[in-house]
Image 1 (cartoon, rainbow, N blue to C red):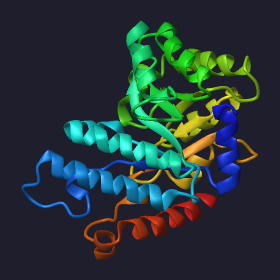
Image 2: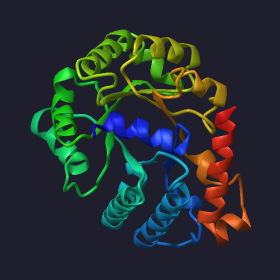
Image 3: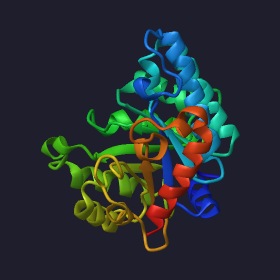
Length: 280
């Protein structure tokens, strides 16, 4: 089954487009103590990631580990990332690796193999990629993704405030390339687009012009995008977009004894609340 079909099935089964980000901020991890070294923090990041996986399983179609937080913790952090990705897939969740990779030729193929191949050390169902180097830089990622029924999410209109300066001039051309690539492969293709909820009008226009493309929608929650803004990225049938919540779904505002003592239970309740918020 193609990535797009698996994604649609998962959204139908869970009844929500919510994807939960796994961003193990070192200073906010349950059990963090002053003086912990990287290895100790990596163990906490692993425990946090597994708690998110346990809380998300059955509630949402996918999780989105943010590679940078794990990479910053060195080898132990990378092992924690590998463990979290594997556990999420075993729990029936789709895994979107948020790594924003971008390169050419064999280097791009190596990035893809590390995440999208059957024996990938960091097993993902899809990967975020940067198109800045041009269409030929995306080709190796697409080759690996299609060979193994995986997907990509190309940075198109990201949620950060300064994104428009360099993205606005190329959005139309890149959007057309993405959707045309997908149209040749069926109703939906394997190439998704990252479109921030912080640009709701532009996102709605892109939704209308990209009928064959799944969106990954950051910016909802902590970054200021509302549930109503995010829902504008959906098709009328409720498909076509995954709406990401990371901090707002996995961390309390300030100290919370329940989060510290039972993070999985706390996160499960919080995910349920965010699901309802998105339902409108």
